[in-house]
Image 1 (cartoon, rainbow, N blue to C red):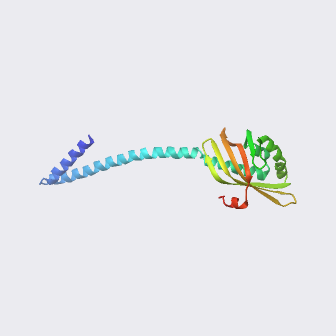
Image 2: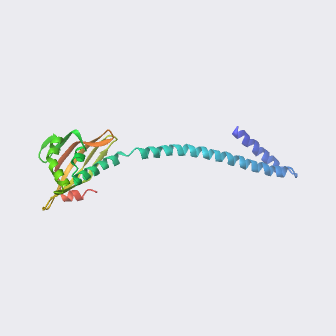
Image 3: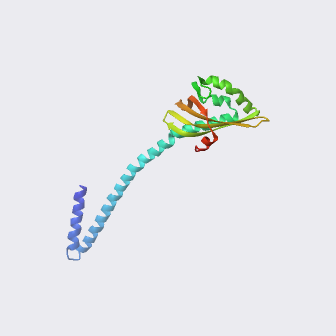
Length: 208
């Protein structure tokens, strides 16, 4: 129907515009205006319809993107929280970052044991940090980060520094791997693998 109406308007416009006489020429001009107005109206409606089709999916996409944090951001926040708990001596907060059945693999000593045993050995350092008897801090740099919606495997080096009251700063660089899972909306460590000691040069070779 749309094409038929356009053809009729075009025919009327051409006929009236080409006929001599005082009546047909104004009518021809009127038909031209009517044709332009009709086309403009339909083009406008078409543009509105196209905008609606474009805007709705775009709005839904951005809503989903804003509501659902990317896996990368979630795991990065995990390592930030590790650093915070170490520097503040928050032992309970640090312990909560591990799965209750997590495993510590220590390539330096050649042993593997439950994370609970490792936490028992670290607890005094956290308590001393919290009581200001010592200061501690840990930083991470990564050489590989494999991320999914509910699992992640990060490889890199961590630098752990500590300073006991009245003593000097002691710093260790350790190659490590961390296997994490997302449980009940939280990222937690399933396995920590401290592979071997690293050098300052290797640390400097990784991006912060």
